[in-house]
Image (tube, rainbow, N blue to C red; front, side):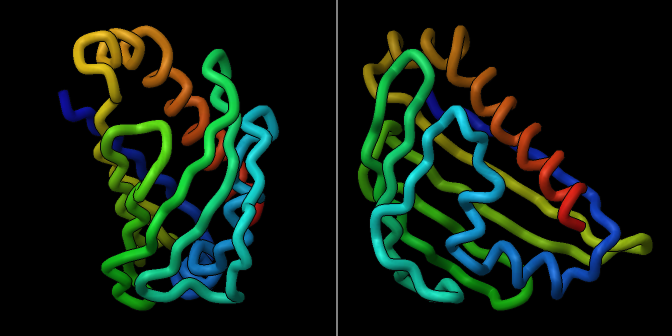
Length: 149
């Protein structure tokens, strides 16, 4: 089964500032909760580019440490991009990021489409554990974005 997560966060900073922050791969460390023991293993440039592969380790509570490789795709500079899992804990992970200017600042949009491994068992684990964990991660990101911006 394909699952979806949709989140928006409103901040008062200009869209250009928000874009510059999310377009800098090392900033992913700043918006990832500490309990995930997130470590970027590959060399990352100052600014992302089309086709950039980022390799990292992440600890998924109750499921251990995982190696994850994502590719940065579909960049519309200043507006949106996608990170797509090449290998990792999910059968499918497609994360669309967008920034939009609105009257009081910038809206940060996250749309994640994902599929668990292991068929029905994976869907059960998603319903019982993973969905909640993803909500916690994106709640944390919202808090950090609001502090930074």
